[in-house]
Length: 437
Ligand SMILES: Nc1ncnc2c1ncn2[C@@H]1O[C@H](COP(=O)(O)OP(=O)(O)O)[C@@H](O)[C@H]1O
Ligand SMILES: [Mg+2]
Image (cartoon, rainbow, N blue to C red; front, top):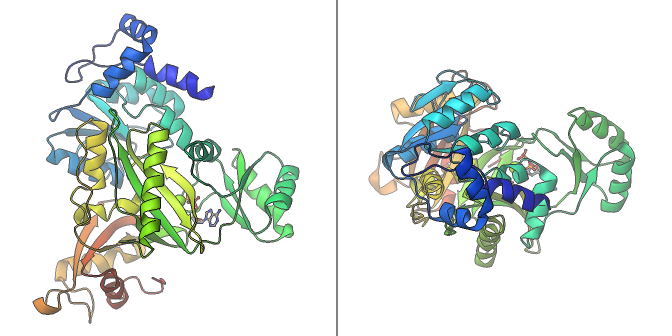
């Protein structure tokens, strides 16, 4: 029911004509609403051509790398972000204003031919406004679904994929009841707004039920309790889908988190071939079932007996897809631009094994030093001896103002002959010491 209502609102939303100059009138929109099918056919065919301006809600590193990749295809970019000189604003135009600022959103709509976003917590009213006044091929339904864990889980289940057994929690009593049913340990999460492990509590004993509820209910959003999945690996697959329905998936990444923040993505993932194929199949199926447009990152848990559980989705480029920048024939950022603009999708083939390691605030100075000197540590001087040159580090720094511990400041893609060489390299540099990789 909700789905149908939203579909209706999507299909009746404004469209632009030609190369994207605003051409939609209220009357045209009414006509479109009256003939939903014809409109969706038009949306399926509509392409945004090089030369057009892509508006990005959010000016962080994802927007920056999107703008850098899309610029190669001849697109222009304008970001909306409250931080002056944001990472994206340094390489593209920027409107400096809050994400909820309707006037600024209107200006973005006016100056851009097509709009996308680099985070999913877009204010619903702003999303609706942008849909009315501009062209948002991803639509608001994808955001509506993925910004809420319960809606997201239902969408994953509707696609025929498995999620950890879960319960919707509205009171402490409901939490106690759900713990009885799902067992311990279990993970209590806020339904909205969580990231990097924030807004979560792993409940390991009955004594923690009260404090966990008290703490997380303060956020004022719904809560969800999930059975704890004793995973052997965390995997992710980034799928891309274009309005006309072409789907492509990137190779599966094996992800290692430290303190709930992504530390490494290892590709190829060190799991059986059958698991790789199944993970890719699930991601494609979810993107298809949700009729997603643009990228859809799918995080999964792999259990000892080879089962895959979908953990969460992100309708945007994802940290675990940064490895694609040099390791794949097409990067996730280029693919996102291609998908949103309805161009043929690029080849996602892996060209080399790779380990992506995140550069947090505490690693930044040492990485900059390595960039400047070309030396990564006593035993890891890649390049000195061409015969022993097993790892090529490709550095990406985001230009963020203000480094802080745990803040994502960049990443390094270690191109290697074998992922173990990349992992050894990380050990030898000492930059990421104290992190169990
Ligand atoms: N049900 C679960 N079982 C086991 N581990 C979990 C579960 N849910 C989350 N985790 C762990 O916590 C991490 C963060 O949870 P996630 O739901 O991905 O939130 P976010 O990435 O938005 O902070 C996961 O990557 C995983 O390591
Ligand atoms: Mg996650």
